[in-house]
Amino acid sequence: MSVGNIIKTVFFTVFVVGFFFIIWVKNPFVQEQEYPLPAKYRAMIYSDNPQIIAAGRQIVTQQCAACHSLRYDGVYPLSVKSDPNFPRIIKEFAKPIPSDSLLAPFHQKTKGFAMYLPQDVYAAAFSSELHTLKSQFGKVPPDLSTMYLARGPEYLFNWVQEPGKIIPGTAMPPILQGQPKEAAEVVAYLRAVDTPTPAEQTRRFEMGVVTIAFLIFFGIVIYIYRGRLLDKMGLH
Amino acid sequence: MLGKLANYIEERTHISQIFQEQMVDYKVPKNLTFPYAFGVLAIIAFTVQIISGMILLMYYKPYDTLAFDSAALFIWRVIPYGWLFRSIHAAGANFFLAVVYLHMFTGIYYNAYKKPRELVWVMGFIIYFLLLLTALTGYVLPWGQLSYWATEVTVEIPGAIPGVIGETISLLMRGGYTLGNLALGRFFALHVLILPLILLGVVSIHLFLVRAAGISNPDGKPYDKKKEGVPFHPYVTLKEGAIAMFYLALFFFFVFFYMKEFLPATNWEPANPLQTPAEIAPEWYLKGYYAIFRSIPNKFIGFVTFNLVLALILLLPWLDFSPIRSARRRPLFFIMYIVFIFAGAGLTIIGTLPATPQVAKVGLFFTALLFSFFIALPIISFIELGYVKAKGGEQ
Image (cartoon, rainbow over all chains, first blue to last red; front, side, top):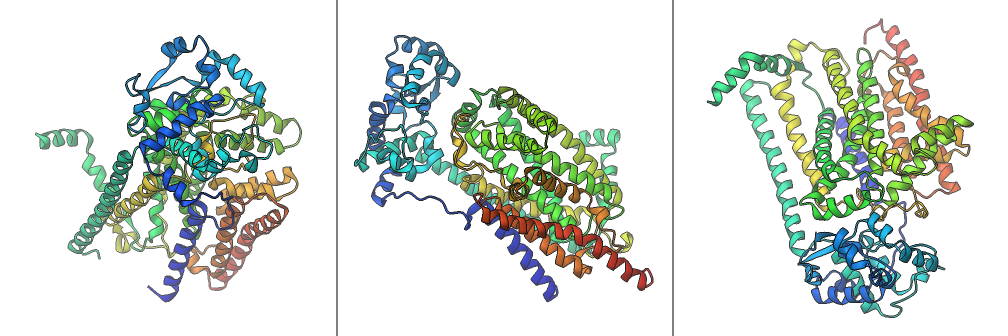
């Protein structure tokens, strides 16, 4: 290979890799809004500690569930739960979805299954309760099931404490103002709803490593085999 | 027993004879470079999409109140390995388009679109266009905030055509005045059956044409197949097989460890027609066109301009009529090619930035750069045509 060819190859490789790095991994031209999350509370959120998650779930069911639902873990707003039809609708329409080991203890009555109501059934059956919430807040307070994935821990940790700082004039009241520990517990619970258990995460990590290692190994084997074959055929 | 079965099939199909003719006796240039592998990688990416898509199809529900939960709850959490197949399908779409772009840019670099390969290029362009449509229709299916609003923005783009025509196209695409169940059902049918079927057909024609016209070579010189050619199998198949394994390794690295970009956070919120998210932009593979559309103040001219880019890419074989092939032997073309890829990459990155007047100005500059490539092509060809003629017609 001549020097010119080497320069060209290096240039195009750097160009392509650099382009996809900017597009897929880290875009230096776009500044993302950052929200502070002290290391202590970050550790709490990522601890996978059943006690912290239980405390978080208690706060969510007692306070957040005054208005919000969290259907993927079978948590419904207070007004919906006090509807006389609620037990019957759950019995007839809810689908039991397996709750992973960190959340299963909360569903002992239903043998570890969270009772999930499909969106259409939920919206139709509790239309009047949801309408009341809507007239109170301007819109139905969103379901929290996927909030951890959508907003991330930093945002949520700040949001539950002082929502007005992030979106001025929001209908969300500052329920946990000045209570970072409780805020961290809530986020830890939301994280437990949206992320697999530690055991499952380890399993996925191992699965990934094995898959990638196998593919690289197999690629190298093919390449070596090709070299020997071409030597035999006199094609090198 | 197995040998008998093989003989039985062989007698009736002559499969080994076909293999010998099509794979071993088929000779290709020895100097094929690494970028020639992108074609095979595209086929692999397509296969990965079809297989993972089939699995997702079993559990996905194309109905506005059920779609989000079927993707975010059932496929993502309840179905065993559903998370894996959704990740593969989402990352696969991005990798597929990345590979197709690289394949196209390779083709432009080595001038693989020139006679007798014009039809290969045209078919390839059709594949690219269908692929963009497939990606666009697939993007709406999870029915998240980003799915919904990115699609809403996309269907509004034809609205830039003045008069009734633009509005009618927008209405047709949206299936009414709001994006809803009707559009979701149509997009679903297009994404899972209609477009992939057409794609399969067009891909086969593309492959057939590649075989019919013969593969181009990096030096752009005619070569004697019998003397210089090497058998396609095992010389190329094993090399590209090894490259394919490394490609899949990289792909699965993203699938297992870095899905943040391919399943964007905003899309984990269910679609809400009443609440527009802060920033809506199409996916990266459309951002270049989007940046052109956005940079030009007049919407209609913007619409015409980005469609013109698409049309010019299709017309490349006729814009570039120089008898010399491959950027390796064309210094002027090489310089303009560098300008072209910088403009393309620049526009894509500009598409990721928030829309401000300054960004629009930079966008206009890069749009001009992009067009300078297309304008320069006939001029370069003319110069080179004169050069070749002056040398007495030899290449």
